[in-house]
Image (cartoon, rainbow, N blue to C red; front, top):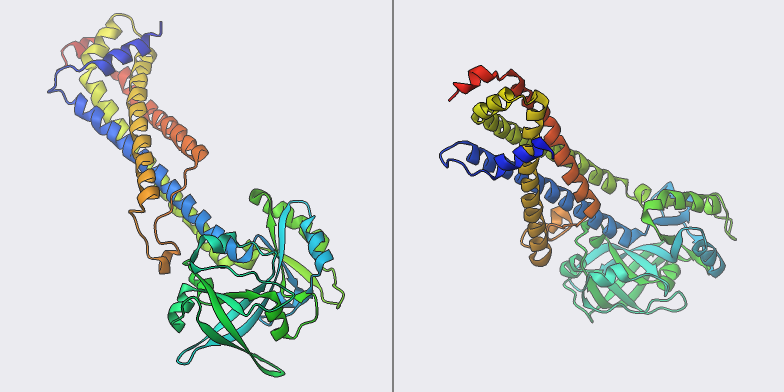
Length: 415
């Protein structure tokens, strides 16, 4: 039989005199561990949810990897590359690529009778993946865009619709200025979407690839580039390396040089901002572990001082210091374990509450989301639980050596 474990169980289950200070100390230590762990789980859940939500929104507009004209990477001007059906098919068959689609952008102006707005037109064809826009569609529908004919339809954001006082079914003129003059197109608003990513919502609308190619004066097969989606985002860099080998410095049939870039390279400012959140997470985790550790230290010291006579008796009966120390460390494990259980239950309850009700709302203009996103990451939660228990026990090893300074003769007279 494990003697320290047996004694620790008896001490932990002993209700004793309600006037003793040990019971409140145990409760405080339990609550400290529970609060610390719950805060850590919620912090990790919110940060992971926020980072992945923003990442998915940026990817929704720009995909994982972009292939474009080398000159377009050096300037804000638009330069085309030729991506015909055979080139598009070759891109799809690169190892790690699950989807490829063409796009063409054109700078223009949307004008009503009373308002106008400078905006970028993103032309797409029938192979475009609409999953992201469909999830954020507010009203209307997504038309069938093509690279063979003009649909004369556009998708606009709620910001654009609000600025120009548009609704689904309204007609609006688009003007495109080039070296050859001004070209006008009449569009019908087919749908309105809202992603809360102001960087894109304020400056982008969707139309067909055929229209943007024509207003840019490009040849058949030319476009701004191709967007590639990877099958495994965790292997993005490896897949991007394969794309570089197949694409970079290759020329199309018009002599234009192609180059590729990942979503991290296309929008470094957004991902740099997201990476800064990791610093805040580490600060909160360290603080919460310190809180849990200090409450456990104070609780253990109180228990040891209150059980001084018992420690003296055990020593008089021949118990070693190490055995008694292990007894109180086992006792601490019971307290920590209870706090861990309560902390997990509280955190999971709050996560479920937020995911189902969205009770904590945010300003989308600042945070790009309308409510605090929560992500359930079981491996991360398990690691937090293990680290919390391990660190709390390690912190208690030093205070447990107080037992070695308790003398049997003196402890018998201790009150």
